[in-house]
Length: 169
Image (cartoon, rainbow, N blue to C red; front, side):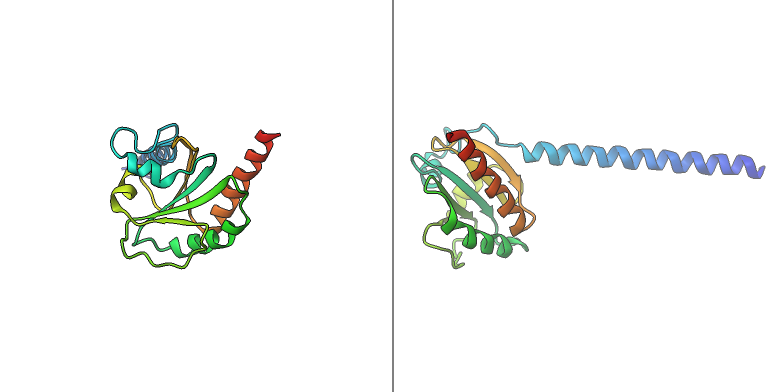
């Protein structure tokens, strides 16, 4: 086989592998994007678990719901950020933490509602944890996002509070 032919074949194989890897990566990015928007516009506890909605929401206020699980490696950082943010929130915003661990015993400010019911944890239908869901007083999920750190939580909460202030003007 001529060296030129071998080089062309090797380059063709490499381009085909690169194309396949790019297609797979694109598919995974689309799945993550769709998972991020999963649940937006959905009412929590609709039809199946009305207890979930009443435990999570507050009348006349926006609930910043943080879903964590017991195997989460970054949840401690997220909980520390919640502890710092909770006292500074406007009166119409509140934090709720929902955990799948019935023995959850992390120290959080009194303003933060902690829900330790695994059934309620399962009813929060985002496929990732830790997650932040912004829920209106009727239990409708207005926004969801995965949380990669406490700083990500701070950024999203500050933006949500600013948007709410703009809307009230």
